[in-house]
Image (cartoon, rainbow, N blue to C red; front, side, top):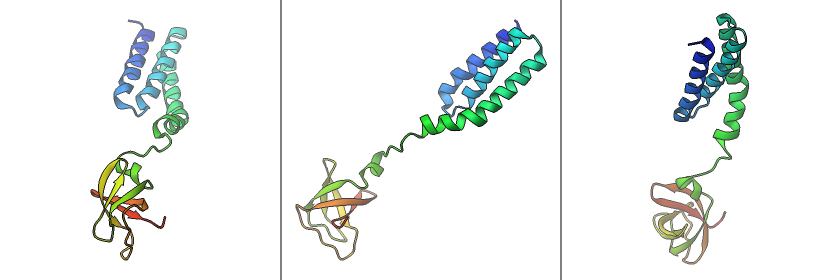
Length: 143
């Protein structure tokens, strides 16, 4: 097997393995190996091939990977699960005070308590979810 073919196989294997890791490290190393395959096809000198692999891989890891991670892996900060409910509006179903109550939040009935100790919120009022504490929505009518 020629060195170019070996580099090509290594490069493709690393790019495919990236699908499992998802951290973009193997992808950068795979592209470095593909660059070394091109170098091996042109020069045939193993030292140049290893140098091309090292420079391309390090360059991609240092320069391209952080930008790609910010762009594709970080995303716009999409909230999920209970984090998505913080800041949402709810309707009070039964009187909410510092100890108990119920609200309709995102189509479901949640147990609730008021954010402020002295605050009592009557049924029918609109409230804002301040936090989710276990299975209880902590709400406030003042936000």
